[in-house]
Length: 224
Image 1: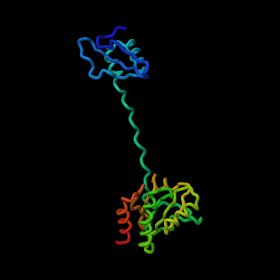
Image 2: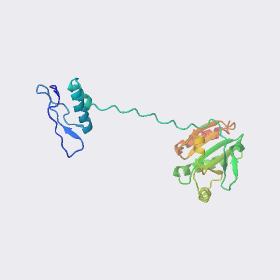
Image 3: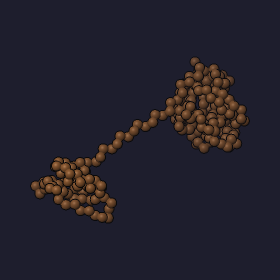
Image 4: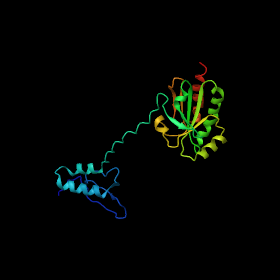
C-alpha cells in the first residue's frame, strides 16, 4: 500500500489506555495540526487501514472521515403527555366505607377533583384550600372529591383523612385506573368541571403557586 504525503507518518500506541493516543506530524512542508492529540478507537483504526488498502481514494480523505465524529442518531420525539378529558368521564369508585359512587351523581354541579396520596407531601398543601371551597360553596352546588391513588391499606388512608380534617368526599382508586382516564402522571393533580360537565381546567402536578388561579376558577362559577 502506498500512502500519500499527507498521511500519518507514525502512530504511537500506549497500551496502558483502552484508546489509541496518537500524535500526527504532517508532511514536512505542512504545519502540525492545531490540535495534535486526538483519540481513535482500535476498531476505527482497523477500519481506516483496511479501507486505505482497498480504496484508490486519497488516504487523506479516509483519514478525515475516520476522525470526523459520527453523526448522532436523531433522538425520537418524546411521547405526548396523556390528554385530559374534555368532559367529566363516567366512572365509579368506592369511598372508604366501601360504598360505590358514580360520577353521574354529580350531574348539574361544579366538580373539583383532587387526586392525592398519603405519601405525597405536596398534596397536603392542597387540602386546606379544598376545605375552604367545601365550606363556601358546598351547599350551593359544589362537589369536592379527593381521590386517593394508593393501594392501601384503607385504614391508613382513613386515618390520614381524619388527621387532615378532609371533610369532603373521599374516594379510593386502589388500582390506579384514574391516571390514564384523566391523563395525569403526578400528584397532586386537580381538575375542575362546570355544571354541564365541561372541563374548565386541568392542573396535573398541581402546586401551591397555582392557588390563586384555582380559587378564581372555582369562585367564578358561583359569582356569575
